[in-house]
Length: 197
Picture 1 (cartoon, rainbow, N blue to C red):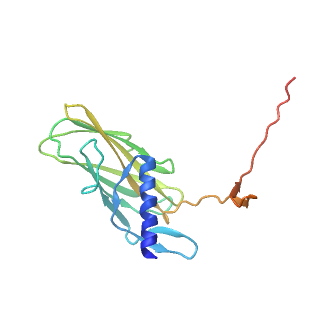
Picture 2 (cartoon, rainbow, N blue to C red):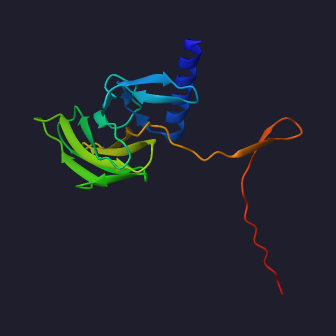
Picture 3 (tube, rainbow, N blue to C red):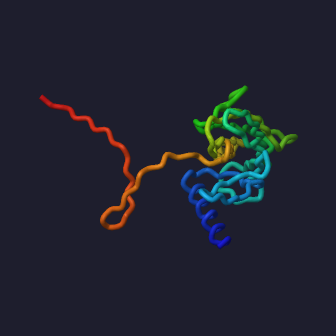
């Protein structure tokens, strides 16, 4: 039974990564807990940590990500500390930052950050503060562009931010059975009639 649940979780994760085209850093502090009414990812610790170092990487910019993300309650401010690592010793790295609309960046807001790459440095830090108004799992997405003189290479990464219980509350829809046994969801519709003269 446990192996079936793990397989379902793995398949769901692969589908999510495949459909968004974004590689998310593996969460190292998250544990699964079962509730009577729903299954949710809850965290034992206040800080969620993850990294892409040592995991499969599609061809693209040779950049890895390590992060610490504070789990927050609604309207609470949390720190998200990101470290980008690259073996490149020259060129430029530009990072475009986009945040899910349910999150708000607090303090210094960045949409693009640039780093000149050098031999003396292989780690580049980005520190953000965010807050959210409702429970859910949201993402800070990074599009990293590296120009090392041979052309521009890119890599897309995402950092999770857990607000409240980390589960987005969705509105329930009414379902009915069709004659063939299929489930149909029923939604309210608004109809407009225009008389043409």
